[in-house]
Length: 491
Ligand code: BG6
Image 1 (cartoon, helix red, strand yellow):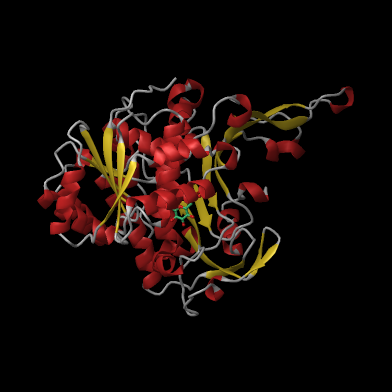
Image 2 (spheres, helix red, strand yellow):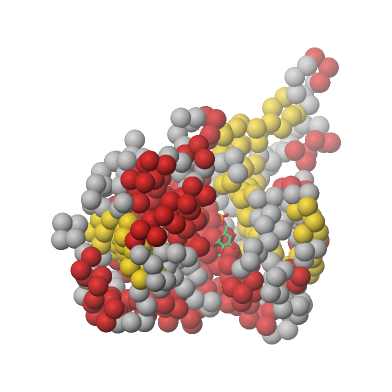
């Protein structure tokens, strides 16, 4: 049972009328209200440039809540109560003097101040400096920032320096929303609460690992942002490397934020650098062309609204990642992620090595390794593929592969699975940093990813095309087939 104690806090939300706030943050706050986790007296100051008043913003937020909260979870009268916590302040983030009004809003009874910067990262430094001069922050203020923290190592250092000039690392909560997903947290429980797995988690027992994060959507009107980022910056540098770290890290000595983050950093430091001569066999980048998505025709990336027809930005990446340490030597991690793939699906597959000596039907040898499938979305759960004897008199000792299945929504029916942002906001209010990314994690991840981007810029092949609605370029299949393996869907 989770603790229901939350302290009264004041939350300043910069960028409160932006997409992230409207789609994710306010619905998450509403869910916390619904769960009784927002302490009485806690308040939100919604801050954005537009010249509106509190009444108009509350009305707009009510409409957005109705739009983004599932109908069965939307209760109008509760939503009306919730929006009473919200006040609106129009503010130009560059206007240092304007920040003075924020002080007037602070409630002396609310000890905790949370500043959430749901604004473009270029504004983080400006907001931090102006908040400092308005002196409404204390050294206990928690500051929340979203990705992307820069577009490469150098620019991420600039942002981190700007934040670091005003706040201590212990005040900073860098969000990677994948860390708030229920099943991602479950990786920690799975690995470190079950000795069954803990004792098998290394190169002696695991042959390889697959991480797939597939999306069926395209770039959804975000061409301007996405084209400068591409899938490697948008998804690999953060979400996929975080998943990889949680799978690969050594056991932390406890659940404190720094114990966990120290172990993740050790993994990031040991990722083998991908040099130009490795590009052909370790990296595939792709870009979708017209095709179909959920049965409907969809345009290619270069035909999306606002597209630069000559763009070489990747919408798909597959990588073979090697970790140069004792535990993972010789165990490749195949990771792939893309837009306009056949379905929305995030899963991790741990392929165990076969038993040392095989005594069954030689024709069935391909079945011989166990697999642990961890589904992050949809249908959060886990499935362990094990071998049993096929039933029946005439079957002899024929083997059959079947799942030991755990689907969270079925097994733990009563518990609603919270959205990642609900969990993250709740942890911020409790002041717990273990689900947030430390500065060195961000920077080591950029250092590794930058090298791949550098190789592309130095004259790599252009992205390989794949039709929308397929699993990416055939080169991604070839990459894993060369090692005598296949992606799980293709098996
Ligand atoms: C975001 C990316 O960080 O994650 C988006 O910027 C992507 O491009 C999204 O669509 C995917 O998140 P989720 O939770 O829907 O898998």
